[in-house]
Image (cartoon, rainbow, N blue to C red; front, side, top):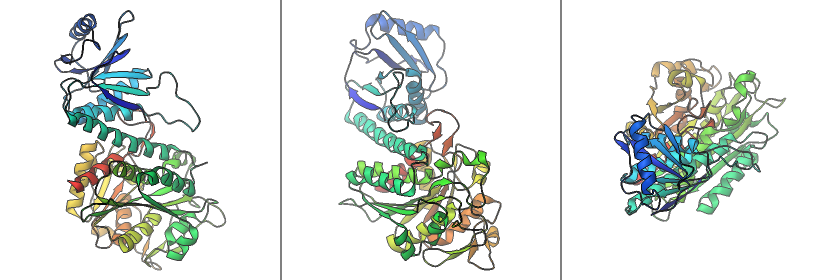
Length: 481
């Protein structure tokens, strides 16, 4: 996570300026930052280089004999939050310097916040523990906001919190499964969240067996790394009546089990706990910002592996609360662990709303592509709030139907349901989960497409994207307001 500070003025070695439809935003930039000779050169360059390009396009002006020695003009499009985030990400990737000064004269607080958020996300690069940044990696940003009101500083602070939560979620999901066991995930949650005042309990397999978490235990049975249930609770001193529960699928590696995945499909399965990462990241931001909302995150964590003790097709498992599932496909394991956590949340936490998110089905990726998450819900208000939060975060959701005609596909002759009813895969997976939510307002987010990116693109980073983190934070914020 890059360091971001706000200053009135500063001498800059590399200076970034916003380029709007009418030219660069120069009025209000202090002379100490942008001397008159450089100001004239920038204005002339902008006039001669044509209209601004799409948001995030950067024009580089080298000025080796001047101070600053480089000026970057970044296109901000219409100035809407999505354009500002794209501008920030483009700037961070193009800068190729450890320290950057960004002047934001005349911008509104939400524009500055979005620009800052984009820079922090665009600068992200996953590195293994112990490796170091290169000289071209952006490490620090000075935001010049001379005479800016307090709401600009508040917007930057909020943007930092959103970005930091997303960066942590990306780091968790990008970590390789050679170290990322269910127990490791629990220790990471405790290390980051406990100092923020979050109570973190990591329940081991003995507790899971005593409580009847048959789905989590069955999925984790084939691995040498036993499963865990991570429970992280934020209880502010003062809060309203809402108690929100978020459940993130925590499959630390998914081989498919005895229904083994093809090799090409298995390579990225260290990110199959991206739902858990987003849930934990959202909780980090909520606690760091001391939001007055009760929030509990549950992560059913297991490694879906294969061995002589692995679950088998045709096995029948009993979930928390007593509902049973016939296993028809061991590679439809995510819903098995989510089912336990959903039933536990409803029975023990008594939430006013529960949201689960998971990289659950390839069918949802086929249906919606890699930029949009699927949303299923039993509650109109909850669905609308999540769609609104996703639009504001730049993490869009598309409402999908819970088609009653497909419920019969879940039927089993030996259990309450079976776990692999076939197509339409995203819908039948959601229908499988619905009974475990009982009468509590419930939403299921299938993020199989947008949780991963093949290449850097805008605020998205190659590998785990952290999709859902900022969406969930904004949803929790809406409960405060």
